[in-house]
Image 1: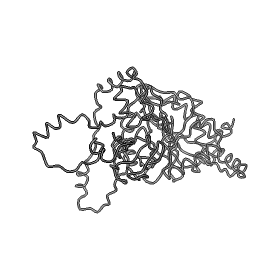
Image 2 (image 1 turned 45 degrees about the horizontal axis):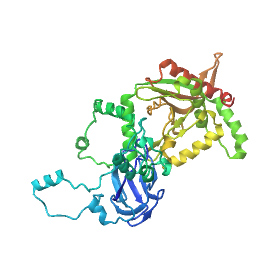
Image 3 (image 1 turned 90 degrees about the vertical axis):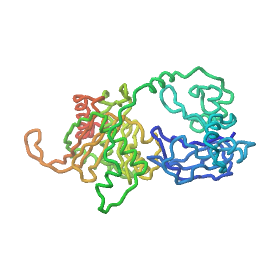
Image 4 (image 1 turned 135 degrees about the horizontal axis):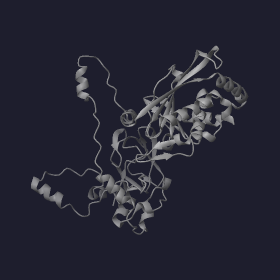
Length: 440
């Protein structure tokens, strides 16, 4: 029977996307791993691979279609011996020829006694005991459902470990997954009350009736940013810690290093030092190197630091993993690469998801200080302002001029208490005001 190709979830948070471009046409033969479409998520445009072999019998969603929900059929794949005629007879998603309207009673009776040979849609994408989505082709999910198989117990041989038809054909039924009680408990839990949505679109339009304005349509990225930041500000108990950091020693040290690295084409930025300072501080104050996980806190071992990168229409927060053990020059090169690919929307999901702490630097835009919103599940974010020459009083009481940078650390109080946050910020300041210690 024909197999439906479903709109994939290309990231854990993806709920819908734009089918930007088809790379195949009806009648084309595809094999597992062949690129068949380009899907635009809220963050990037990604290539979508076929997970089964066959012939593209029907394209159901035209390229350029926006707001296509995950698991929506987008095309129909035919196997050996099947033809396009099988699509209509099996309910494979193609529109059947118009028929003469039947009386309402006949419609109800026909609906109640649907033919048994109508193809069943593939079950929704399953989840393992840890709550993570199990990647399996629609045909594999359907066969597994028919055979009573537990997909969490099957090892996939397809691209990136995806479970395909061959993996489930010879598999034997397993015991019910341990996740069942968890799923039942989740289903039984009361739904959270919806937060007020604010003025409706019609209400806002009436407010400005008679005034000229340009209506800007929200793309997937802007919708996601709006939803996540609204949720973060409403549900995370923020508190803020502020410090001034004297940068003169760091600026001098940076200049000396850049002269030595000039032959290698390396030029360190102040932001590279900030990344390193935060990474080392998270190691020095390990209780603060944590994330909120709903009913528990996860203490991280490595320092995975996310850095906000502004792009047209929104922002990315690419993550520099193991930043505490990387050299300044390695961090600099990786940050430049991630920032470039972020602006080109070419980052893979694993490159902008995760991390335990974030940095948002608006100093290059002339901003003295600001308060950033914590990006869940991170426990904190450091908002960095510009370095400005100011009069300061030295340790011996003498008045001098110093380059001072103001920072504000926004903290999730569920993970980090005030004293712990103060220790973390103190460690960050110490690293930046004494940069030599970061090379020890």
